[in-house]
Each structure stands twice: as C-alpha cells, then as structure tokens.
Length: 420
Ligand code: UD1
Image (cartoon, rainbow, N blue to C red; front, side, top):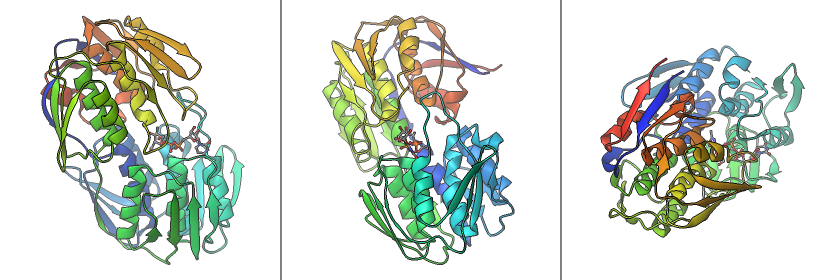
C-alpha cells in the first residue's frame, strides 16, 4: 500500500488547475447507460473511483474509450448485462448509481447491496422506495438488489424524507425515461446534481426546476448521445484553498468556479483570508497571517458541505482561538480527530461536534488515512507540522484527488509517495 511522506514547511504558493468533479463525473458516467448514441465527455478526472465506474460500465457491455485530457467516450448501444457485481460495488458505493438508469432503460437491474463504510451505515432505502413508487418490483436476495419492471417505469410524485444526493440522482435518471410526469420533492440541490441534470437535458431529457428542491421530469421514450464537459471539482478547489490558508500562503486556482463553493469561501474569509474571484479562477492570500479559528456546521447544499469539514478541522488545529466542527450528515465522520491528536492537535470530541483549540504548530507522527476527506485533513496537518509525517493507506486519497502530489509540488510542498 502506498504511503505519503510529507515534511511540513512554509506557506504554499503558486497557481494550479483544478480537475473535473469526481462527484459529477460518477453520475454522468452512469447516465450514459440511458443514451442510444455515443456520449462524449470532457474534463473527466483521472481517479480510482472513475476507473471503477468505467470498469463497471464495461462489465455491463458498454464500449468506452478513455482518451487524453479528460476525454471519455461511451457507447451504450450494446448492453450485455444488467448486473453490477459485488467485487466492484464493494470498492465504491457510488456504483449504486447504475440502478436507476439500468432499470429505466432495460426494465431490470441487479446491483450488489452496498455495505456500510468508514463514515457510517449509509442506507439506500430512499433510492429503493422511489423506484418502487415508479412501479418497480424490488427484492433483496443473496446480497443483491434485484429490481424489475413490467414495461416502462411510471411517473410518480416522490417526496424524499431526507435530502440525499445519490437518491436524487438515481431517481432523476430513472424518471427521464419513465412514462409520464415525475415530481421529486425535497431533492438535493448540490451543483453536481445540476451538472447531471444539464447533461440529461443535452441528451433530450425534459427536466424543470433544475437547481431547486422540486424537480419535475416529463419522461421521454429515448435519449440520444451528446457532448458534455464535467464541472470543476468544488471539493478539490476547497481543499487546496484550505491548505493554503492553514500554511499562511497565497494560491491562485484556475478552471474552477467561486459560485459553487460560497459557504466555504465565507468561512475562509472569516478565517482571515483575502479572496479575489473571476469567472473561472479563485485567488486566496493569507498575507502571511495565521488563520483565525472558525465554527463549521455541515448541512445539504447550499450550506457548508460535509466533504469539507475535515480540512477545516486541520486548519482550526493551527488557528488562533477555538473553533467547533459539527457534522450533521454522516454519523461517523469525525474519524480524523484521533489521528490529528496524534500530531499534537488539541481536539475534544463531544457527540457529533469536535472542539478544536488551535496550537501554533503540529508535530509529525505516523498516521493512517481512513476515508477520502479525512485523508485530506491529514495531508493539510502534515504541511503545518514540524518534521516528516508518514501517512499510510493513501489509496483513500487516490480515489478522489487527481495527481495530488504533483499539484502540491507546484505549490512548493515537500510531499513524496513511497510505493509498496
Ligand atoms: C454524496 C457524495 C459524498 C457526500 C454526500 C453528502 C457522491 C459520489 N458522494 O454521497 O461525497 O459526502 O453526498 O453531500 O456524490 N441516506 C439515507 N437513505 C438513503 C440515502 C441516504 O438514510 O436512501 C442518508 C445517508 O446515510 C446520509 C445522508 O442521507 O446520512 C446523506 O447521504 P447522501 O446525500 O445520499 O450521500 P451520498 O449520495 O452517498
């Protein structure tokens, strides 16, 4: 298993290009299952999770070409299987996103039941209930979700009682080929869902209310191929901004957008960062100052994203003052606390709130990555620690951050991958 050795140093400085969004590219790749023609995608990041989704789609019989510079072309005219096997689903929960499209286009889908993961049990009951409301017959058998429908799915009025990103995406992808009108209420409004909806519209889908909590979908009988550019990764953007803030640095990030991470930018300004933004760039300058501690509470978009709390916790660990981080989306997502404390952070856990008392500098220690975003917080902590930190199990980081060491090198960080 690869490891990182990171030696803490001075401020991060420089410019880098942000990659395409992982969490938009995953549902968009799943949505190619709905098209009769060829879908040509651009700005798809090169990541392990994307390779897993591509492998899954190939297992289903799709012809996929992965080109240079984020280009991926998918031909779903010949689908030979409707089964998403355990081996792939167990490595990536987002595999569940093929359920809606398979069922909508082929009338059946068998998807291995996704288990729990490091950050909580993460059920898929809302996905299944929504599909049942659209006429699907669903059984759980031998660890698989076995879904079938007689003829097309039927439009339905579906209220999701929890705001769920994956649930909204699955039901949206099912609804676009259903017979009649589907209304999805209490839909998640994350920018990645907006991106998916725009891609579906480019394929000929009829969707109203994009970007709001009520999506109205008039089903069509078929969808065509399209060309589509995946949006920038707002979590990658936020991660580099926070890393720069924690190290008292100055960075300019390009090929990204400020409008999709307002809640994060507000907190960075509160921490003392000077921000400038343009159409497709963001610049952050700490002017050499130590960040001020901030209070964070995660909630569905447009509120503060759960995928950014661990990075802010690392920043708070070296900030002036005491800040709290409250996680309301996942039950077990403050796993980084004990690892950060191994690096001499002063963090107290009380229920779903971490109380972080800032110290001037952390101390290097061997630590272990446990999930994707928690790992990002360890990288940031290592950048502001005295000595060399060894981070084990970095495959979690490789799932979601493209060329992370090359990008941090560009900003002047001392980060080395040890291959094992
Ligand atoms: C997606 C993101 C993930 C992000 C999360 C929340 C992808 C690939 N992943 O995950 O990075 O952290 O949104 O912004 O886009 N829930 C249920 N029943 C369901 C579905 C969800 O109870 O049927 C619960 C979950 O356990 C969780 C909450 O709802 O507590 C939100 O989960 P959800 O929005 O579905 O997250 P994901 O789509 O899995």
